[in-house]
Amino acid sequence: MKYKVVVHKRVVKYLNLNRLPRKEREIIKSSLESLREGKFKELKVKKMYGEWEGYCRFKVGDKRVIFWLDEVEGIIYVDYIGVRGDIYKK
Image (cartoon, rainbow, N blue to C red; front, side, top):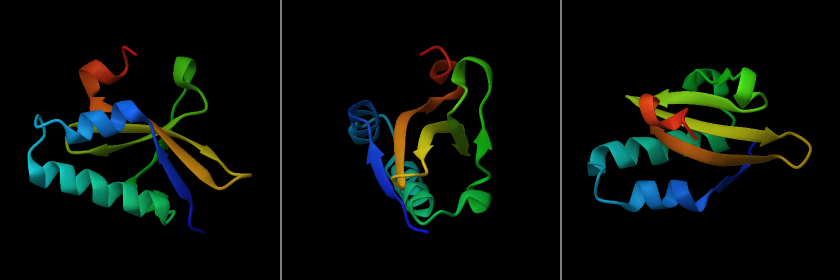
């Protein structure tokens, strides 16, 4: 099943800043495309618990991509992206 991916403006801002090397930015964009195609096992998506219940995450290098999935509408909302030490402080 293909999903629609909605990316939060903070994620777009993070990806468009020159902090990330171009190659890393392309890998993340490619991972988001795989997410759109529903390749959850390939990305090693894991459900989150506790304060982050209802969200899922996957790793891209040292970055974490955190999203939640609306199965009914078929939409994936990508809310956060960042390094492990910073991302869980949100």
